Image 1 (cartoon, helix red, strand yellow):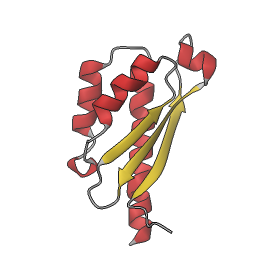
Image 2 (tube, helix red, strand yellow):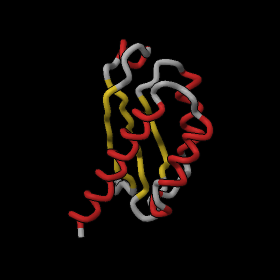
Image 3 (spheres, rainbow, N blue to C red):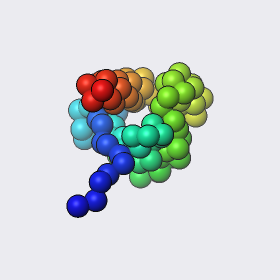
Image 4 (cartoon, rainbow, N blue to C red):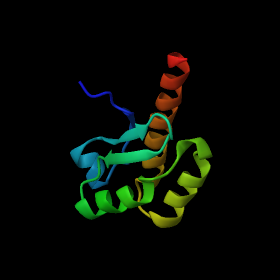
Length: 108
């Protein structure tokens, strides 16, 4: 069986009421696939309704190295994504990334 070099982590937050995300999912969710040696995000999925938004966020996030800290990635999101769900997405991202670092701490 192949040894995987990546892990999946998830994070969630409450979606803002009045948005299609809230109507469909009730929450903002993110799934990150992260390479364990480089801490690089190699895949991402969000609970966005529109496929354009999903594609756009993939371009924003994939390739980012988490060991550079989360602030530059949050700033990138704030500079390029203007929607009511912006803060919910950031909270979900922070939750997923914290789960990733917690996993690595337990693994030591």
